[in-house]
Image (tube, rainbow, N blue to C red):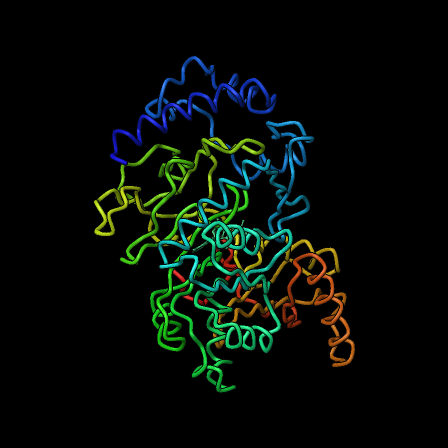
Length: 422
Ligand code: DLL
């Protein structure tokens, strides 16, 4: 499809979508009214900038049903994000939404060389997380034999991978690295028939790509997406591995300055904003992803005309993604303070043997200070449990003596991320 044809298609879909959303979602209607814009003002993609942004806080405010654009009787599924403060994001799907999402993931599998001759091992988690169901739907649409493994149980993963001759592996890059290591240790490496991997949901470097490619003898493709926009498959890499093609017939991408909210031209680094023009149940208009990226509209030698996004280079909020789980420092602070600790703490994230580690150093308040190792260990244990309940992942907690964490004269440095992901 030429750029002109794509532009016309996007405009037609956008106009219809805005009218539908205005008519069906009071929350959006109010936001549009506040900005003084009506559906008649939106005649094509060139008018997109007139519309208000939507952010995660809108989603929390409207939780759970406030952004639904279809009656619940027409919705067939929900998915949800991992570990956000208090209210999670819950996204709704009609059957048509699922069909289109499957199409997006099918494109990613095809771009990685997949066909009905392939055996696709889906080792993303199934459940509220979108990874498993998304790639599963795409794989079936392509006609590949689909192995719905879900994540974990590495021994069984390797057994099915070898016995059933999986040719494409879909999982997070960190799990792919772990599987590669285990395959080498158990001798399964020589029996593997894998040719490609489709890895995403978290940041990973080119170094990690080369490491996984070498260890598994495959070509590793990046895939991007987020729950709010359906899940994986918003963008995916082709054989050139030079940026991810955005499925622009479903999602219009913009880059904005995260502070001024001004729209930036392609080629400039800023926050990625998406407008979903085909989603029915949970349509996101100018949704601020918080992912910092660059868009590239140069022609790609694979022949696809859709613009490419760079790997996310960071986030414009403070959300960390640790072992695939979204973690906000404020959640950790809440747990520490609720358990009688001081507000002097430091969060240290690292990646050891391709697995993320989370360490929390926190000062005991003077009133609780003790030299007794058993008391300290009991307190640390209690905090680990409380953090697990809040975040869904295990952290190591180290209680340190009062005044031992360096004070800052400006903004406190609460998070030290040593993973060098971007
Ligand atoms: O992670 C959807 C997904 C599943 C994508 C499987 C790819 C594969 P969420 O849990 O809502 O959805 O997290 C979305 O994860 O805003 C990015 O910050 C990050 N992310 C997703 N894909 C990539 C990627 C899924 N390829 C958030 N590289 C997004 C870097 C990614 N970060």
